[in-house]
Length: 217
Length: 217
Image 1 (tube, rainbow over the protein chains, first blue to last red):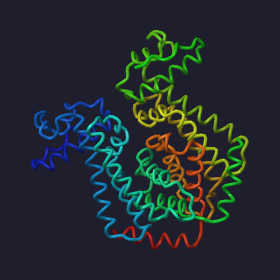
Image 2 (image 1 turned 180 degrees about the vertical axis):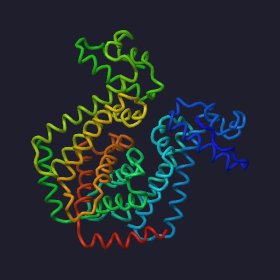
Image 3 (image 1 turned 30 degrees about the horizontal axis):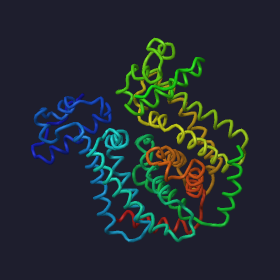
Image 4 (image 1 turned 135 degrees about the horizontal axis):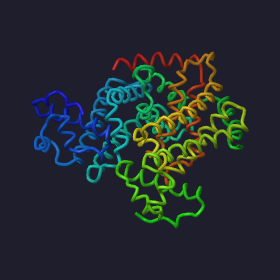
């Protein structure tokens, strides 16, 4: 455990300092395995000093999760305010998400692995923020692929598959060999856009033939 | 903790019984939080009886992970033996993966969340099995999208994005409202196939226009 830089004095900066260190410790040791003492050691803030910011490990986990999601949504909304075109709006969503999580792998791991560790009422509050994020993504999707289009895509499955592509990156991304956020955005937006917007007769013919092959095994 | 059915007598069946219960307990309590005593209680097998099958919690986690991946790969290989056509081979991969993990949500959670909990030498052995699985998927992809094709797709990113779509399902799938394995396979194969195999001039024009839009925010 390497102690961090001295804790900042300003209270908002101090909270951010705590959340950053706590996310790393939870990512490394798991929520169950980590103690407030570990966090005190890592942040350089006394136990009673920490108590001013959160009164329980549950509250701390809630603060990490809600702060991350709120930041992502706020950033996305300010990006979207400048963009009308549906494909560009999708690209903004993907880029915003990938940029945040490539820069915050510990937060990604904590959001994904410690989702169930959060108890009521915190759990419900984080779920509400996530629903807001999903609704925003779904709105972008519906502008891109109108319900009355000839596409026969299950919108919920499509949007959650897009999140799957983005949210799995932390499992495999090696900065030394893999593309950066900008290239990853291009690749994933490319697959997804073609995947949900392409229609042609050849395609459907191909799927029918192919399906029987796949099901005969 | 509800005690399970009486433990089977046959030693291979008994091991499967242990792995099934242990996966559920690790999924519910996390690897760190779970004790061998919990597993003894849930399986109805004494501590010394369990010791015959694994000598440490590490070994047990290794057995859960390696057994799951080996089963998936074996099943896939026997399915692929009957299929030549590249798209049908991709469909077999996706269907095999989704079927297994929809039926085994606890194993999915343990594979995803407790990947880092495994120490050497077990870690290296599981990594080797995973590399075998990835190589198989990559082979299927390369038959589908030959390297010298006009497609400009990063194969590693594409294959890992496909795994992302599949591996994220356990996070959102609600059997009461969401499609079953067969429909999910159709949806994901549909998005992915169109996503990596479609080429047309309109497409590239769209991406160029769109990219500048996305980057201007």
